[in-house]
Length: 128
Image (cartoon, rainbow, N blue to C red; front, top):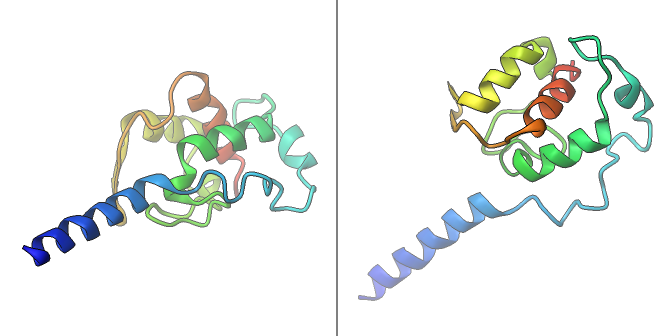
Protein backbone atom coordinates (compact mmCIF):
# COMPACT_ATOMS: atom_id res chain seq x y z
CA UNK A 1 0.00 0.00 0.00
CA UNK A 2 2.84 2.40 0.84
CA UNK A 3 4.58 1.69 -2.45
CA UNK A 4 1.39 2.43 -4.36
CA UNK A 5 0.85 5.73 -2.52
CA UNK A 6 4.48 6.74 -3.03
CA UNK A 7 4.26 5.90 -6.74
CA UNK A 8 1.09 7.97 -7.18
CA UNK A 9 2.56 10.96 -5.31
CA UNK A 10 5.87 10.80 -7.18
CA UNK A 11 4.11 10.47 -10.55
CA UNK A 12 1.85 13.41 -9.75
CA UNK A 13 4.83 15.54 -8.78
CA UNK A 14 6.55 14.74 -12.07
CA UNK A 15 3.48 15.55 -14.14
CA UNK A 16 2.77 18.80 -12.31
CA UNK A 17 6.41 19.84 -12.42
CA UNK A 18 6.64 19.27 -16.17
CA UNK A 19 3.46 21.16 -16.97
CA UNK A 20 3.59 24.05 -14.57
CA UNK A 21 6.77 26.06 -14.26
CA UNK A 22 8.29 28.90 -16.19
CA UNK A 23 5.90 31.66 -15.21
CA UNK A 24 6.78 33.87 -12.27
CA UNK A 25 10.42 32.99 -11.60
CA UNK A 26 11.68 35.14 -14.46
CA UNK A 27 8.75 37.56 -14.71
CA UNK A 28 10.95 40.61 -14.14
CA UNK A 29 13.86 39.24 -16.20
CA UNK A 30 12.50 39.74 -19.71
CA UNK A 31 15.64 41.47 -20.98
CA UNK A 32 18.13 38.64 -21.22
CA UNK A 33 20.10 40.88 -23.60
CA UNK A 34 20.50 43.62 -20.93
CA UNK A 35 18.20 46.09 -22.65
CA UNK A 36 19.79 45.79 -26.07
CA UNK A 37 16.64 44.67 -27.85
CA UNK A 38 16.15 47.65 -30.15
CA UNK A 39 17.20 45.60 -33.17
CA UNK A 40 14.68 42.89 -32.33
CA UNK A 41 11.79 45.28 -31.78
CA UNK A 42 12.51 47.27 -34.91
CA UNK A 43 13.92 44.47 -37.04
CA UNK A 44 11.98 43.27 -40.00
CA UNK A 45 10.45 39.82 -40.10
CA UNK A 46 10.40 37.53 -43.12
CA UNK A 47 7.21 39.14 -44.41
CA UNK A 48 8.61 42.68 -44.44
CA UNK A 49 6.76 43.91 -41.31
CA UNK A 50 8.09 44.73 -37.89
CA UNK A 51 7.90 42.59 -34.79
CA UNK A 52 6.97 43.96 -31.37
CA UNK A 53 9.57 41.93 -29.48
CA UNK A 54 8.21 42.66 -26.01
CA UNK A 55 4.68 41.54 -26.96
CA UNK A 56 6.10 38.50 -28.76
CA UNK A 57 8.21 37.54 -25.75
CA UNK A 58 5.20 37.88 -23.46
CA UNK A 59 3.10 35.65 -25.73
CA UNK A 60 5.99 33.16 -26.00
CA UNK A 61 6.43 33.04 -22.23
CA UNK A 62 2.74 32.33 -21.65
CA UNK A 63 2.46 29.65 -24.35
CA UNK A 64 5.88 28.17 -25.08
CA UNK A 65 8.47 28.90 -22.39
CA UNK A 66 7.51 26.04 -20.10
CA UNK A 67 8.94 23.61 -22.67
CA UNK A 68 11.37 25.73 -24.71
CA UNK A 69 12.72 27.91 -21.87
CA UNK A 70 12.15 31.62 -21.32
CA UNK A 71 15.57 32.28 -22.87
CA UNK A 72 14.91 29.88 -25.82
CA UNK A 73 17.57 27.49 -24.48
CA UNK A 74 15.27 24.46 -24.46
CA UNK A 75 14.15 22.06 -21.79
CA UNK A 76 11.42 19.54 -22.43
CA UNK A 77 11.37 20.92 -25.98
CA UNK A 78 14.29 21.81 -28.24
CA UNK A 79 16.24 25.06 -28.02
CA UNK A 80 14.93 27.81 -30.30
CA UNK A 81 17.90 30.19 -30.16
CA UNK A 82 18.55 29.88 -33.91
CA UNK A 83 15.21 28.55 -35.13
CA UNK A 84 14.94 31.37 -37.72
CA UNK A 85 17.93 29.97 -39.59
CA UNK A 86 16.17 26.59 -39.88
CA UNK A 87 12.54 27.55 -40.56
CA UNK A 88 10.70 30.39 -42.27
CA UNK A 89 7.92 32.30 -40.52
CA UNK A 90 5.32 30.28 -42.45
CA UNK A 91 6.91 26.99 -41.39
CA UNK A 92 6.98 28.14 -37.76
CA UNK A 93 3.29 29.12 -37.98
CA UNK A 94 2.53 25.62 -39.30
CA UNK A 95 4.47 24.00 -36.45
CA UNK A 96 2.69 26.12 -33.81
CA UNK A 97 -0.75 25.43 -35.28
CA UNK A 98 -0.35 21.76 -36.21
CA UNK A 99 2.45 20.48 -33.99
CA UNK A 100 5.53 18.51 -34.98
CA UNK A 101 7.14 15.13 -34.38
CA UNK A 102 10.84 15.43 -33.62
CA UNK A 103 13.83 13.73 -32.10
CA UNK A 104 13.07 15.36 -28.73
CA UNK A 105 9.46 14.22 -28.70
CA UNK A 106 6.21 15.59 -29.96
CA UNK A 107 5.05 19.18 -29.89
CA UNK A 108 1.27 19.36 -29.75
CA UNK A 109 -0.49 21.79 -32.05
CA UNK A 110 -2.51 24.72 -30.84
CA UNK A 111 -0.27 25.73 -27.94
CA UNK A 112 -0.75 29.37 -29.03
CA UNK A 113 -3.87 30.73 -30.70
CA UNK A 114 -5.17 33.75 -32.56
CA UNK A 115 -2.87 36.69 -33.20
CA UNK A 116 -0.28 35.20 -30.84
CA UNK A 117 0.61 32.54 -33.43
CA UNK A 118 1.67 35.12 -36.03
CA UNK A 119 3.38 37.30 -33.42
CA UNK A 120 5.41 34.43 -31.97
CA UNK A 121 6.26 33.01 -35.40
CA UNK A 122 7.50 36.40 -36.66
CA UNK A 123 9.65 36.86 -33.58
CA UNK A 124 11.06 33.33 -33.72
CA UNK A 125 11.82 33.69 -37.45
CA UNK A 126 14.13 36.58 -36.49
CA UNK A 127 16.10 34.32 -34.09
CA UNK A 128 19.12 33.40 -36.19
